[in-house]
Amino acid sequence: MPAIQQAVILAGGRGTRLAPFTDTHPKPLYEVGGRPFIDHLLDMLKAQGITRVLLLLGYRAEMMVAHLGDGSRFGLAIDTATSPAEDETGTRLRRAVDRLDDTFLLMYCDNYWPLPLDRLTQAYRASGAPMQIVVYDNADGYTRDNLKVEDGLVTVYDKSRTTPGLKGVDIGYAIMRRDLIDLLPAGNPSFEASVYPRLVAERRLAAFVTGHRYYSIGSPARLPLTEAFLNRAPAVILDRDGVLNERMPRAEYVRNWTDWRWQDGALDALARFAAAGWRVIVVTNQAGIARGAMSEADLADVHGRMVAEAGAAGGRIDAIYHCPHGWDDGCDCRKPKPGMLFRAQRAFDLDLSRTSFVGDDVRDGQAADAAGCRFVPYDGDVPLSLVAERIIHTNGSVNG
Image 1 (cartoon, helix red, strand yellow):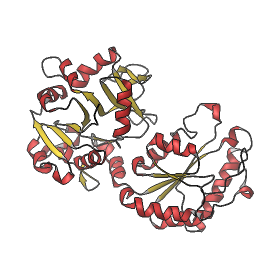
Image 2 (tube, helix red, strand yellow):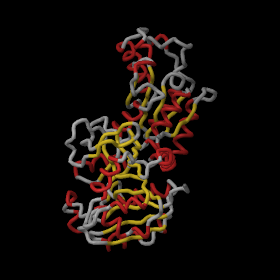
Image 3 (cartoon, one colour):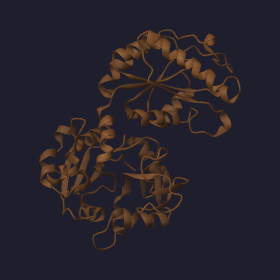
Image 4 (cartoon, helix red, strand yellow):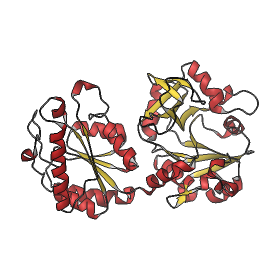
C-alpha cells in the first residue's frame, strides 16, 4: 500500500454550539491561538507528509473557499466539494466518491490531535481491516465514552453512549478504504451511524488507541483548553535519576537527601529553562517504594528539597510525577509505559509531538516513543546545561 497522500475533512455542518460566531461564519474559521482553527489542522497535515486535502463543505462554503484558496500558502493542494448544509456525513462522502483516493485519511474539522501518520498507517496495515479509527482512551473522563475496544478491534460503537461497559471515544480521525462508501444506504445517511455498526458486527473496524488528549472547538466549554494547547507554552520533560541527580548503583535508591548528588550542570540547566520561560516536568520510576526501601514520605522530602534547591539556583520544577510500583504490578505508569507522560500532557495541555523528553535509560526512550515524545538521550558525558541550551535553541520555535 502506498503512503497516504490525501486527507478528506468533513467541514459542512452549521456548528450551532459555537453561535453567535457560526451565525455568520463556518465553524473551521473560528480563531484559536490567533489563527483560524482550520489553519492549525492544515499545518499539521503538511508536517505529516499529506500533499492533497479535499474539504467537504456546506454551510458558508464560499467563506471557506475564499480563505483556503488553492492551498499553496499552506504547502498543500487544496480542493473543495460543496453540498447543502443539511447533508449528513455519508451523503457528503458519496457525492465526492470519484475524487477520493483508494485509501485516505478522514477527519472532522473541529478536533485537533497530534497525528503520527506513519505510525497510524503502520497500525492500519497490520490490522488488515478496511477502516481504522483513532480512539482516545478517556482515562481521565474527559468526555463521554461511545465505544468499546478489545484486541485492537471496536466491538461496540454506540453514538447514544448508553451501552454499559463503554470505554473510549472516537475522536474523528480515521484511515479508510474508498469502497466502504458502497455500504451506505439510500437517502441521507450518517456514515458513522450506517457503516460503523456493520463493520463492528463483521469485526472489521480497527482501533488505534491513544492516551494523548484531543482538543476541540466543537463546544464553548472546550475552547479554553484548546486555546491553551494551541498557544503551546514551551515545556520539557526530564527523567530524574541519571539526569537531574547521579544514579545510584543498581538496586539502590536515593532514600533521603544525604544520598542526593546533583548531576553536572543540572541546576544550571533548570535555571536556563526558567529564564527562557519553559515549564519543567519530572517523571521518575521509584520502585524503591514498592520494595520497602523507602516510603512516600521519604520521596516527598527528597523532592521538596530538590525543588527548593532548584529554586534557590534560579530554576523551577513545575510538576513531578512518580511511579511507586514494582515491575510486576501491572500499572500503566512505570516506564517504559507512557502513563506519566500522558498525565503530564493532560495537566499542562502539552503537544507531546513537540515536547522533548530527556532520559538516560532505554525505558525512557520506549516511554517517549509510546507517547509520541521527542526523545533526547542523555549519558552524562556533557553537562546537562549544554543539553538544555540545545533544546531551547533548536526546539524553541516548535514548542513555543
